[in-house]
Image (cartoon, rainbow, N blue to C red; front, side, top):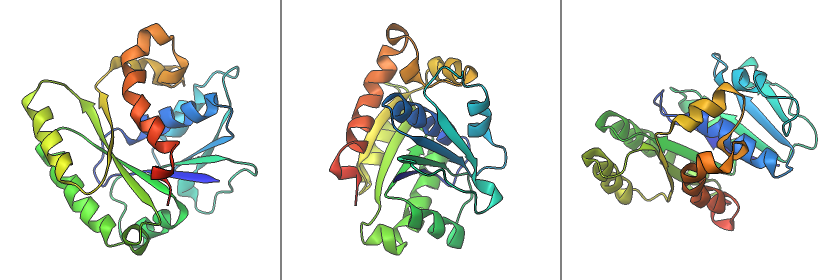
Length: 211
C-alpha cells in the first residue's frame, strides 16, 4: 500500500484541497483509494459526502478517531494532516508513509512557518535516512507577482524538490462543491490546472518519490 502524507504546521495552506484532488486522481486511474482525515473538522470527509455515486469510489476514514481500520486491498492511502501536528504524533504519521507533500503559500508568514516545520521534519530519523521522500508544492501561486518571485527564491534554497506550482484557481472550489477533483471536470475548463498537476503526478509515479 502506497501512503502519501499532506502536511504543514500552518493552517489554510490548501492541504485538504491537495489531498482530495490526489485521491480523485488515483481513483480515476482505477486504484483502490482511501482518504484518511486527521482533522476533527473533517473537510476531506465532507468533500466525500458530496461525491456522486457514479464516480470512481474513494473510501473515507476518520483518522482522528484513533485506530480507524484501513480497508483491505487499499492501494493508495492519502493522509490529510491538520496543522499543529508535532512531536510524537508527527513522528507516528511519518512512520506510516513513503512520501510527504508540503504545500507552501506565497506569503512571508507561510514561508517562515514552512522553514521551521521543514527543520523539525529533518530531525526525524526516517526523514534523515531518506526512508521517506519529501516534496514541496508552491500553492495558490500567481505568476509575475513580486511575492511569487520571493517564493521561488525561497524554494530554491530548500534541499527538497519543488514538485509543482499550483495556481489560485476557482476550479478547485467548483470541483469541491461537487465532491470532485479537477481531473474529473471537463478538460477544456481545467486545462491550465491539469498542466500544473502534471509534474506532481509524474513525480509521484516515479521512483524519485519513493524511498
